[in-house]
Length: 472
Ligand code: AMP
Ligand code: ZN
Image (cartoon, rainbow, N blue to C red; front, side):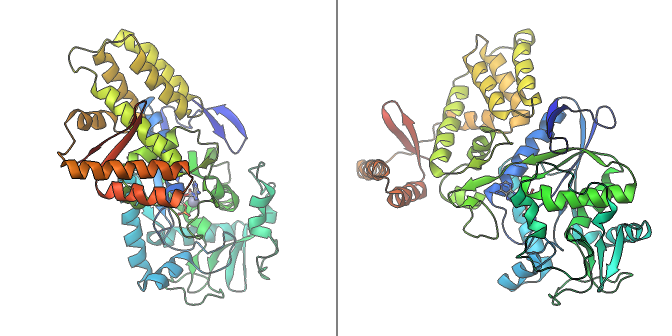
């Protein structure tokens, strides 16, 4: 497989440290709020990568942390702890908040067919490991104590900015003027490994340490958890592109200083999901969640398809219009699959070239949209229905769009009998929505879509206008 590596800024042949085995680490969510669909874009694409590697024959061992302590409201070392802010907002304890939003995160993942990693580790369960790593960094001279905190000394590294392609804006996060400078730091880019002193003294969770009662910095958790669970050589580290700096840069500094050799070979970063206001982010508020999509009548797997239609290394802009297009595409796919006969046996020889095309698409830096094109080619191909079904089932081990299941549902008569009055009412609403959309009156169009969704109306644009039925 060829994979783009942020570390070298090149597409490279993927060669794991141990042949046939992939050790993969993923930065998990900061569980102070629901995951938004931007976060979930990253997790969907990472899931496809994991599943493709398994499909291609690798054994994959994947670990994810849950950030339930230490992630401050600025990605630099300043501000309030995000978890504590969440707990205050909801009048709960930090651990209650963490449990609630961790469960909500995995419920969303399940709806999006994102496989739960083999090992999931909440940061608060590994404090002794963090302390051990900080002690080792102090012993090796890569860290220093100042003003009650322990800092990583970035001047000890030959090259701190390992991801050379960072934009000026990204780099500014840690060093920009508006971030109040911490007088304890020897260098602007130094970062906290362990806090005992902060302006935010009301931190709820604190632990005893050789430096006094305190709590870990954000970056140390991923280094310590990854090294402990996956060993000294990591093959792939994943995350959204905003994590490249400072989080991943600091992880590399810590892990390599601790281990004394290069640590992770491939860095896989997913570009952002944006909306009309720019990057979708939890702190901005007003973000979109899986539950909200469901309330509006969308199957979460339609969002997965929407993500797969684009390459992970391109920013993706979300709009309900493009989600509607994905919904139509999903339904059409399900219909075409439903029309395939279940009789007969697949012909392995005839299927082989399509498998190879699919492997070539996904193996080329995870080109999911090309993978979908191969799936459409299969539907059009001169193949038996049994072979087509077998190929779709096979590809869906990677794409996880639930296509065969959706086709099953399609095959069953879903429509509910309606009275002529109900039919006329719905027809009128659909007509009004079309007019509102034409007039670019999105508020009205959205309100009508919500009302139709509440009545379980499923719509489909066809050459003859909108076709619809009521589910249930
Ligand atoms: P957080 O919960 O903030 O720690 O973020 C969880 C994951 O989502 C990280 O890998 C982030 O890099 C990623 N992420 C955050 N915002 C976005 C976005 N708008 N689009 C894609 N990924 C994102
Ligand atoms: Zn991390």
